[in-house]
Structure formats: C-alpha cells, structure tokens
Image 1: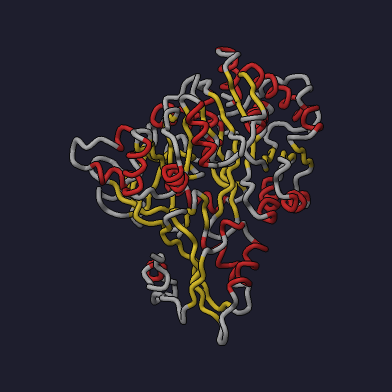
Image 2: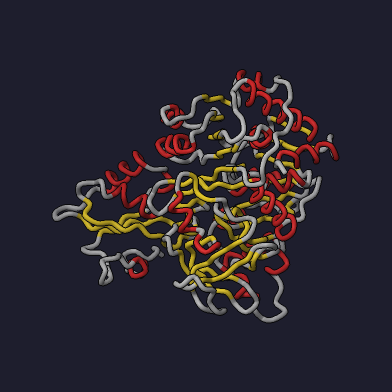
Length: 508
C-alpha cells in the first residue's frame, strides 16, 4: 500500500483533528493537510513532470511543509530524499547528483552556498517553500494517489560510508510500513490528541516517526525555533498535553540539566543514535519520571532493531535492571536479531560478534552500490558493522563499532572521511580520528596527528581545511600530536590503543 493512503485514512476518520502545527506560523487540520498534499502531488506531476520512480530532494530545516511534501512525493509515486541541512555544500551537491534528484525543495534559512553548489549537482528545479512559486503549486487540481509496488523506493536515506562517500539507502514502502507497525507495537502506542515534537532534524529519525503518528492521527508539532531549544521545550511542556519527541542522548541530558519547570505535558522521550550512560539514564529517570524509551537502529533498518520500553527502564524483578539499562534493549517485533562470528554463524549468548538483523524493515539496498549492497546483505542478514553481545534474555549490549563510527550529539561522523581531508595538509604525515567520551556531546572527534619533520601544522589551518571540505559538526574538537601511531603487524592503526593514550583520554 502507498504510504500516502495512511494520511487520507486519518483525514477521512478525523478531518478536523490538528495534523500539523508550526508554532507561531501554521496550523493545518487533517482535512487541510490531505487537500494540500494531493494538490502538491498534482503539481509534481503536471507542472514538474515528476512521476513513478523519480526523486525529489528536501533540503529543508524543520517546518510544516516537510510533512505535506513527504506525502505528496509518495502520492505522486516518487521517492523523497530528505537531506541534512548541516552538511557541507559539496556534500549536498554530491547527494543530489548521485540521486539524480529532479526537484529540490528548500527553506530560506538554508545556506545559499549549499544551494549554489547543489545547482551544479544535477537537480533541475529549486523551489523555496516560503515562496510565491510554492504557494501556486497548492492550487493545482488534486491528484489520485499513485499505485506503487511494495518494493518501490519511498525514502532515499543518505548515510556516510567508511569510504567517506555518502551512500543512498533505499527504503521502500514495505520497509516504512514495517517500521510504522513496529513503532506502534513496541515503541509508542500513538493516538489522536498526542503531539510529536520535532526538535531533532526531520531529515532523520524525527522525520521517520512522522509516519506512525500520521497513521494514528496524532499531531506533528514543529517548534518556532525549528530546532532544539531547552527554554522553548520547557514552555511547550507547560502548555501542550501529551508531547513526545525523538532525541539523541545528549539532547536528553541538556533537557534534564536545563529544564526549569516540571514536565507535566511530556508523554515520552524516545532516545537513540548514541550511547546513554547508565548514570545519565538514572539521572534522567529521576528528573523526567518513567517516560524514557530507548531504540537502536540505523538507516539500513530505520529505527527498528531493538527497543528498551519505558517499563523496562524501571523493572528489576530479576536484579538485572542495571544490565538492561546498559543495553540497547531487545529485538523489536518481527525483527530477527543475531550476533555473528567471522564465519557468519550466530554466536552463543555472551559472545561478542557483529550485530546482524533480518526482517521486513531491512533496506532494499544501496543506490548505485551493488558491491556494497551484496557485502552488507550477505547471507540474507543486514550486517550492521556494530559489535555486540546478547544475554540469555535476548538483550543486546553494544561493545564497539567495527566501522569506527563516531556519534556526536546524535550526528554520525565517519573517521576516514575526516582523515582523508586532514591528510591533504602538507604538514600532516599520518592521522587517525577517534571518538572519545564527552559530557555534553556523548562523543567528540579527536584527531591524532603525526606531523612531517619540523614544526607541526597550526590547528587553525587544520580547522580551515576541514571547514572547506566537510560539515562543521564533523571537524575534530581537538588535535593531539604524537611521534607515531600504534600499529599491528599488518600496519593497521590500533585505535583502541589510541583511545587509551594519556594525551587522548578526555580532559577532566
């Protein structure tokens, strides 16, 4: 079934129910959202010649138009490409070119350099959602919802790979329907009258959770700041009932430390995208009450690998509560979870291996990367690249990331991408980028540099080089200069040893 039909079903059942609210700007009922969505779908087809299999990019900050554009793409039979606006302009241009995006919708707050770079990247038409041109699209005759196959791509989710080049994860209507059902079964029994607050980017996890909440006729609530502002969230929780939001652990702790009032309007916080330390989790539970649900997933199985429900944050019937809080929970409904050895066979409980998943939530593959698809989906399993262990009760604990992924403030940083940039400096001989624990961000990137003989490169030059090539959030927070990098007999850098180096460990 086309995902757009979920919106139409909710509009038919509860036409007057608030569907989308952007504070201080917009409020649409379900009937209005459905009308706008079908008009946009008609405009995509008639004015912009978008049809089945075409791709439409959304390079947008959080706003009410995000919701109607997602569903308009699906109603027209096209795939949506939500793009992180924090990416470097060159990265945005690469994504639009790689995806062959026919149309790109933008917000006026997006960096003009990003749009200029994207114009040369392959997208043919750019439309600002605050423009007269966009408003004209809303007056087109409504379209009928396109018939799609369940394996047609609905969402093209770009995630960086260890090579430093982003890869387009092809998420189908089937995948996102399975994700929707998993959410409603395991994570949050959504209902009309509840508000999903989009304080995290709608291009990622928060946006994916639009789907189950639209299916349940809940309200999408976009803050006036269009982002995460503790004071604003504090105000919202005092005024708005039944609020839930998706947040990275660092965001949860900023809320815990910065909230002035009591969270009386808060229904739940669904957290993921990084490690939540047990001490932090206990402090958050003490401040927020039994309102925390943890999920573990990745773009290739969106938000749907494991779950630690709110009740299980508190349950200590067997004396293992602390172990559960240190885990990422148990497999979500319909998801088969295993820890595999080097021979791709499941390991016994307690043994450490690669986390693998299979089920209806797993991606169709990577766009334009048949080799990477075959490797990642070898043997019918999604190989996550994360190392973990299962206990006898089926709870998964992550122990390391085999791909050296750094998650800082909920955003992914892939070390090799940063290393390749830093190695362009003539004074850098070798470099290894690692993640180290940080109280504010969860992890931060630290670059361990071996300089060429003579004076080391000035840190300001390394910063400038990064800012020219990659997004600001990927830039190392610190540079450590050493005489040599620890390596094994095959010449591979031993990043585990680097993390234990006295010059690298977090400053106290």
